[in-house]
Image (cartoon, rainbow, N blue to C red):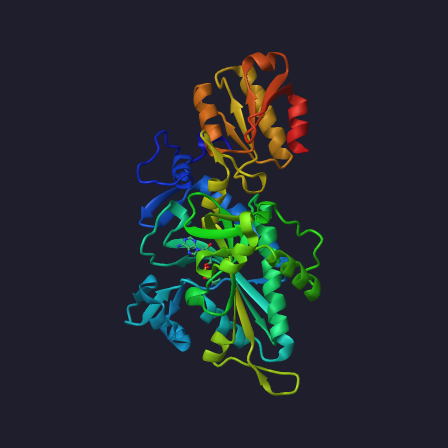
Length: 438
Ligand code: P5A
């Protein structure tokens, strides 16, 4: 992509409305614009990051045998009356009337809809277990939308719903998502700690929140210092219920809980290893058994012919919140530092003299070769000062900066800078290409 033809409205000044660093940087880097309280337009750079995150989430859901669907955002009040949540959900639910005066709503979550869609397609015990998921916009009319996309009113969520015949199966489904979440967040360069949590309006008696530690987080969290070392999930066979159960039981030996679920005995046992901090909840998993299937009269035919009420869990990831959470965890005074896996482009190609024929020719060559090799490049071909280009590149935080100037090009060399470390290296054009396409 050529910057001269892109849509990247960067801001020089930090907007006064933004209190936390991720919100400030997302506005300054031209990723989002607020269009109403807690509602954001996603501009090209932000959209690319969102798509990157979505794709990692999707790959790990697919790997965990969940099946992707897409449900409508607008749902009927009737559906929600069946579970009793239409009244119970309260003012966070955005209620709408259509022209026939029918009561509708913008989905804040989708347990009810997935339950009836599942019932519609599953008749016998052979149709279980199943886990269906979607990546879809949600709306919650939060009292205090704030911190940009971290607490929006409209936000993108991955929500999955599992259906099992018995408790052992349901537990395995829960554990499978648990591991999928650890893998998902690790791939994004995040250390997300699973913590025992309250269930709130979703219900049920078993739940974990996945928390990224950050001083700007809204949750108060308590955990054993062992959690400061990332856990390796590579060798775990998620198809083996016993192996998964053992692994998670092992994890649970290290205390970690949100403030609603504090266990003072466990904290005393952790002694000086106990840590307290603020955190951002990037995902939450729930087991609630037959809460919805029973209320909504769902059953399938069991092996002996008798009806069985499926047991459910639901599993959420804050996809749009993750964009802010990753920035909270990875930035410096100059701007964002994208982890490679979620970066909107891999390389900023910086032409220091767009008015110099040799310099521009070298840049065009590099741009063509990198693009042909499948490397995503944002080519700053604008007629601007070098200083402004460096500042923009640091602000938008692409992992690599490839700097091309007339003096270097006369000797066949360019400079490659790693955004995260600031480390710069002069090398030949060929060496830079080899490095970036490796
Ligand atoms: C699980 C999936 C649920 O709604 N039902 C379907 C369950 N869980 S949850 O914890 O309430 O939400 C899931 C994740 O969505 C993100 N999230 C938000 N992100 C941005 N702005 C908000 N206002 C917001 N509310 C929730 C969180 O990451 C949460 O873990």
